[in-house]
Length: 439
Ligand code: GLU
Image (cartoon, rainbow, N blue to C red; front, side):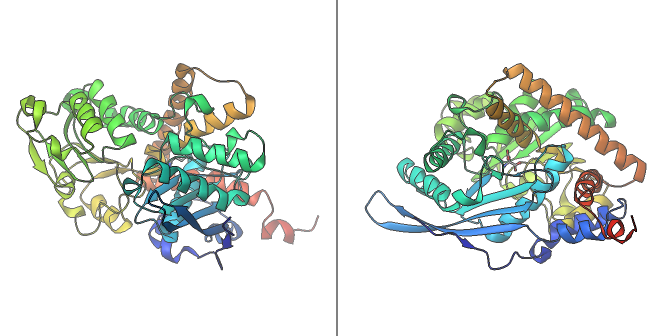
């Protein structure tokens, strides 16, 4: 068994400076005690582990894994586990920071956490992936739990992986522990609607906010970067509602058709062939009409109404922000826009709807799954859908109202809203002012 090595000292926000600059902006509009601010500058705890995995050819490979709990004042840590070659402690810390604010923004009784393994899962067999996933849980088992820190899917992890993780934790603890992982297969205690929850949440936010600018399905063109779990499901929802999706892409590249793309066809093609770009003039999709092959970078610069980055972080940066022609950006990925890019977009009048609001549907239904696991009583798909819509629409409207009141960006408003809740929770344990008062 791997012995967990604690990170020598949690790294302060220096590497998260981009994320923390958002916090600084929001602070002007929040009354937050200095104590609370000091607490939020540092991740609460982090674990770096080595995970030895026996490969199918008999060799041994050792992978690096991480779990960071940023803050758990409002409840147990909550956040996904990412499998990606670029996963690093810095990235996991930033993602855990965002989870903290996302959970507070949606008023979920959770703190923020995140995990990851530095690996390209596409290079592993299914058996190797299972051994890696179980090995990760072996290594972090003492650091997580249904009341401590709850795992979930993220980039390149799915329900199958969550099932293995929950099973491994239950084996270690010698008792069924469904509440330690969310995003599990339905048959293993998963929730209805969790697989499409991120997309459904984003769809609700888009449907609520776009009409404020007189953008309706009939007069709105959309480009989506990323055709994974969230991007593809959102493309279907928007397409079904009548929005014109003119461009989509995946890690290999994308396609563009000003007259609109045939989303159901692309989804079935992608399911069979894995990559969208190979879809260009191949087999039956050639009859889909005029399409142009574009790169991920080109997609970001298209002349569309709505741009939806739904892949990875740092896609819209100071280098390309001035070239963005979309008027509205809905961030489905975590951290797709850097803070330098935010300023440029703002100056160009592009409205950015931030990740911690737009993609919060996933963790919201994770919360519902956790509640169902603890109660042993399961909800219908309709119940899940309605509860998600009610919650995320209310928080989207509240965030919009804060933005209007203070004349600030939606991003800053989202941090203000989340900080108000986080600050209250942190201050409820006592502040300098409280202790200095005579009883
Ligand atoms: N990985 C997702 C996110 O970034 C979901 C997290 C969760 O369900 O805990 O929001």
